[in-house]
Length: 221
Image 1 (cartoon, rainbow, N blue to C red):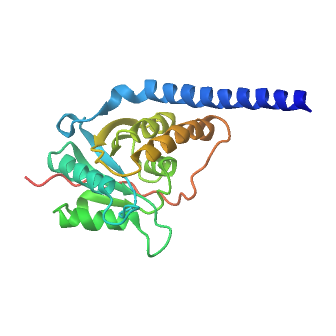
Image 2 (image 1 turned 90 degrees about the vertical axis):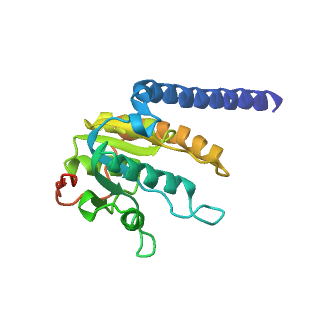
Image 3 (image 1 turned 180 degrees about the vertical axis):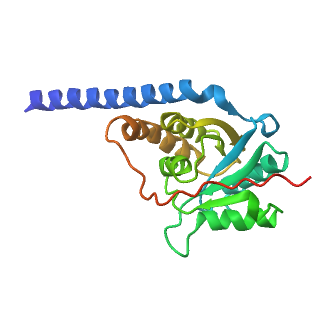
C-alpha cells in the first residue's frame, strides 16, 4: 500500500509539472509571437481602418462601473477622435435582453459624441475567438487595431494571426481593480485553450450569419 501511495504521488507530481510546463510554454509562444505589435501609448498606436473593441461587463464585481470597461471605451473614443482608426466594431455578449454589451458600449460612445455612422455593433461576440472570426467572415475586416487591455492583447493578436487578419494591438489602460491577478491567471490558461481551439479540436464560432460589410464614413472636416 505504501509503495502504491508513493507511486501515485510521483505520478501526480509529474502531471502537475507537465501541466505547468505546458502553460509556461504556451504563454511564452503566444507572447513571443505578438509582443512587438502591442503599443501602450494611445498616441503612438498604429493607424488602421477598423478598431475592434472587445466587450466586457459594464459592472464591476464589487459594484459600480467596471473601470476596465471605461478604459476600453475611453481609448476607443480617443483613437477615433485622433483618426488612428476610421471606424469602430463594437463586439460583445448579447445573451439576454437584460445584458447587451454592444448596445451599452454604443450608448456610452454616443454620449461621448461618437457618430452612429462611425460604429457597427456585433451582437454575437461571445468570446475573443468569436469576435475575431466574425470580424473577418461577417464584417469583412482584413486589417484592424485591436482595443483592449495589454494582458488580453497577446491572445487576441495570436487568434487574429491564425485567421489571416493583419492586426496590431492598442492597449487601453489597466486601472487598479481588485482581483486583477485573477484576470491574469485566467488569461494564462485561456492562451493554452486557444492553442487547442486553433490547432487541435477545430473550434467554430457560436453563430455566424449573413455578411454585413462595414460602411466606413470619412471623418468630418
